[in-house]
Image (cartoon, rainbow, N blue to C red; front, side):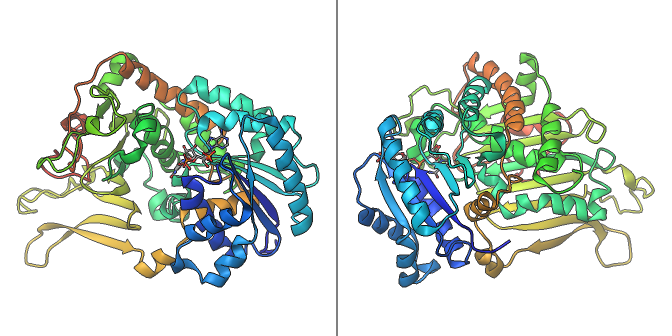
Length: 495
Ligand SMILES: NC(=O)c1ccc[n+]([C@@H]2O[C@H](COP(=O)([O-])OP(=O)(O)OC[C@H]3O[C@@H](n4cnc5c(N)ncnc54)[C@H](OP(=O)(O)O)[C@@H]3O)[C@@H](O)[C@H]2O)c1
């Protein structure tokens, strides 16, 4: 396959935050690397009446001076065009179609088109149906649709959204973004699991005690409070990012590493997510909302702008998920995500069983207990692996001591590594759907999330229940303590 790709990007919401902060810098990096050269164009659309020149100016400003020289940035920006457009106005799609056809000729893009929805989710269906009714799809090239999250807010709305886009685009043309699937260490999971026999052999209920997936943020809701009040952590982080990571950790080995085979295994796994009665939701899932910090320097969630004084919206979720299949029976998967926690980290901790050390008496071990072996996979902000193993300290007797084998990406490698959006954009251009979510996965994960949401919506929570800058609510620790387990990422106070 030639490195240079031919395509037109049509970005709905081309004047917005996502486009400027993520998409344009990522496209520029693809330009620098030669994936995009002469045969591409970008049409930005939004309501405000910008000129091409003004739009190009904003694009150039969105690209940091650290990733390219001014001449390169300027030649890149010449490929950008602006079309004032209201997504609800059918006539505007006619103008858009004309511009796309003209640019297709001018840049010889092979009539390939990527429609990118960087607008509010309520517009996704409208845009897709107008693309169809106003005849924007080309017969000669490919037509691909990129959809940002959130993909619905429950199973019903996700199904409606899916039907509205499925009327225009086939599943193999739809790229549902979950940017966690673009992160290096998340993409590395299948490789880690299936090319290292030392891991593959023990990746099951015989050796693992529990698996922990943590997505912790230090930031509060900031300016996103308006959206967050309609979402909450369960919808915002668990339905998509946390469960997608769980899918890659827990799925069976695909027959081959292809989009179809990976999605088949992930869908199978998600179909096995448990069905909970309301009582089981109460036992297996806990929620929290941050208050101020201990010193009163950081405001509580309820004090943020656009948040109700008695808001029941959760900024923290921890849950226990049992997968009832031969590989995982009896192994709890604990997922957790929260805002305003004491550290930003995304990590996966696999905690091994401790039953194999029966041959040593406590006297032989000098009364020091051996610890569970733990494999930790660090996704961000640092990328790496750490394996904590029982060994001994030097000396005459057997005195157990945990040794860790660590691997950390160097700063240099991290700075060369492609950011999630860059990786995902390359995949879209190449037509590779592996690192996107498919409809079946959405359907299963929403069905699972809905049962928790419905129970929570009927019960008023006692919020706030954790301090800013902490590890979240006490109930999160108790969830694991009931099973005799504890969070690997925690401190002894847990508050
Ligand atoms: N920002 C992020 O980091 C982020 C992360 C993950 C997912 N997302 C998702 O990405 C999407 C965009 O988010 P964002 O943060 O970029 O939002 P944003 O900054 O508010 O941008 C929204 C864009 O939509 C345009 N727009 C609004 N109403 C329109 C209409 N009736 N017709 C045509 N264009 C219209 C706006 O421009 P005009 O006002 O000029 O029309 C603007 O360009 C959302 O679905 C969001 O959930 C964003």
